[in-house]
Length: 252
Image (cartoon, rainbow, N blue to C red; front, side):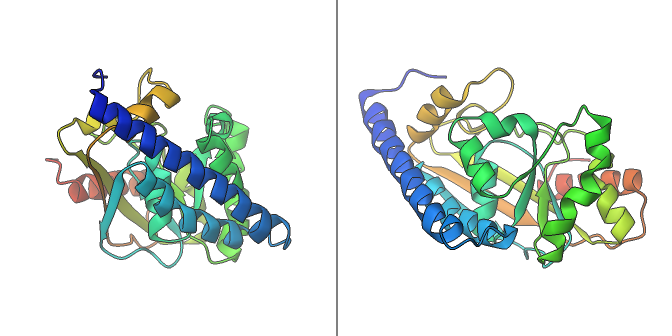
């Protein structure tokens, strides 16, 4: 990461203070809206995450735009670039996320995902993967879309990694539609692959400070056409990845 100028350093400090203030506000809202009123259903958590996702992203200097239609049911599959993906997607519509288990212990983001009702999975544990259909059931019965990142990890955004087909088994078993989505970031005067994308050996706090220092960050989400039932999970994974690549205008 580049050494910040005095202007970008002040910008980062200001935005980081706004971001932390938004986290405090979100925490208080969670206590009154979710805990004290005993509305711990996933739907209430999803609405809470959506309400605060855009505010937190804005505090970090991220502007959000989207095209296409958010699905009304089933699964949403998206490429994975950064921890900001959750805030950006949540800001567009209430939804429940599936995440790898270690995110639960991340600073700030881990707390946010726990409050949001995120479903966690140890991807290396086959018994955990086998439980995925049961994990999705509470969300689906409350008419919530479940969003997952089938690449299994984040990348620099320049490519779409192969999709893990096992995470799509619930859609195959229950004949759910699965909608592809693409997310990308642009940084004015910067490089989104380093300033927004969170991958490799990056560490959270220095990355967040650098993100807040950028002049302007634009997040764009494109929703594709839902894929109807009828494919097995491997066929579905290939079709989804191809559609996500198309949404990102990759050459196939």
